[in-house]
Image (tube, rainbow, N blue to C red):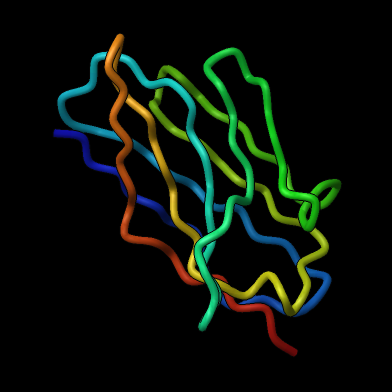
Length: 118
C-alpha cells in the first residue's frame, strides 16, 4: 500500500504565492507520473499539472506560466510552486501518484485547501 500526503495549503491574497508539497511512502516499487489536481466547490476535479519520471511537465492552460511542478525522486516527493495566485485558484488540491511496473496503480492524498482571498 502507498500513502500520499500533501502539505503547504493555506490562505493567501490575490497575487501571492504558495508552495505545495507531497510525499509518497509505504510499499513503493517504482513511482511514475506524479501530479496535482484540484476541486473547487460545486465543480469537478481537474488536472493542474503532471510530471513524468524524466521531468517532462504538463500544465492546465489556466495555470500555465504561473505554476511550476517539480519532483525529487530520491525523496519520492512532488512540489507545486504557485505564483500570481488568483481568486479562481481557490480549491482543494490533491496529489496523485502513479506507482508500479508493469501494472500501474494510482494513489491520492487527502487534499490540502488553498484559499485565495483579499
